[in-house]
Length: 482
Ligand code: NAD
Image 1 (tube, protein in one colour):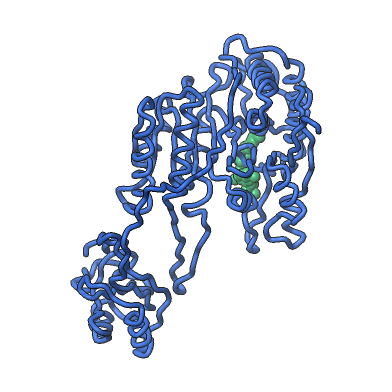
Image 2 (cartoon, protein in one colour):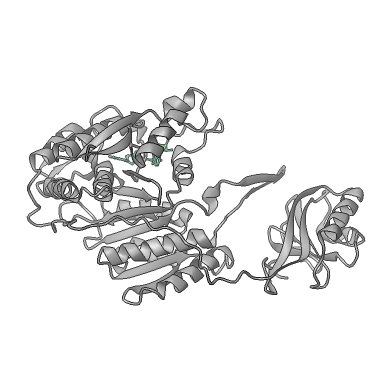
């Protein structure tokens, strides 16, 4: 049996093929023991009519090798094309997206010379579930899903990452002052799991002020863990302020497979000109070599790359007069790294991956967990507004009742408009109408009966949500002003 590791490689679109060629050249010259299976994904596959951007044979390769080295790809705009990146992450269960953002001052210009943060982004849920509905001619809805298993997996990953990499602090960003239930769960899980890592400093910031602090004083942070959307946005910001989006690599880690890439996209305007910086993809490749246990190779590449930066050999995106020595293209940059394999940086800190392990944490449900008692206590119907003002709409709808299920309130975009609405509140063409039975449990038959009565009275029920309590605590929020 060969001791070489099979990996699946996609060369991508735009600048993808150039930076992948450069990165693979360096990785192979560094002595990587890998067998490459090349797959075609992305723009060409999309435009051939495959809306997922990936053929079944490509999935087979990924499921066989379980290691995916992927150059950026272009998702064509419109036409119902699904993002291949999001699909791959979710279908293969790549729940942790690890994005180190490091400053290389004074060799790469940055306002934050001491910056060295790792963003651990949740990768499978949140608004990236992509579950969206059109409720009316005027209203679109996107579901934000945050689960306990999803939060536990990513938060534990962040703490384990910190522990294994000698990091001192883990900071969580959420917006749980507004999204008390979804972001609130993420924050709660952070506190629960954090208690098992007493040696690591822990803090939580509301994402808006946390993002401002990160952009202003990134030195204040170490490892950051956050839900998907915040992590997506802030890892680009962090990479850019560290020096360039072209410098950051990323690992998408799951228990069954992993994917390694640059954080940036396919930069189509730079394609085909031997201009692009291959560093982000190369550092993604370094993370891959650590992941497959070839840490000596990872170390050799990383240190040669640091030495290249230090020697002032820079692509256009990080080139600065007075700091850089030579402006080079993609190929020349790769050749400069290859020429330095075996060397270490002299001023920047050399990297050591000796004994590095990659995290492959299985999520196991807590066997002691007692599930809460669930009761249904009402229903929310989303109704078309019939172009009626809220007061008249509510007064009329109130007449429809079924066995104690009565209209409790109506809101528009989460703000109460009946009873006692304010004339200043702007309303849209869709109302959420809440029926409850005075806090008492209700049966599905009661709700179905009410459903029929509401439609029989001429209302258009667009969407239904049942209202539940969990151990007596409401599993739904009140409307603003309720
Ligand atoms: P982008 O990251 O491709 O480019 C933004 C700008 O950053 C470029 O114009 C360029 O100036 C600079 N840049 C990016 N990478 C660079 C590099 N390696 N070297 C030098 N400069 C670099 O973002 P975009 O323009 O918003 O997206 C272009 C396409 O990429 C879109 O189709 C998008 O869907 C796709 N995309 C793919 C991925 C991925 O495959 N993981 C990620 C993000 C975007």
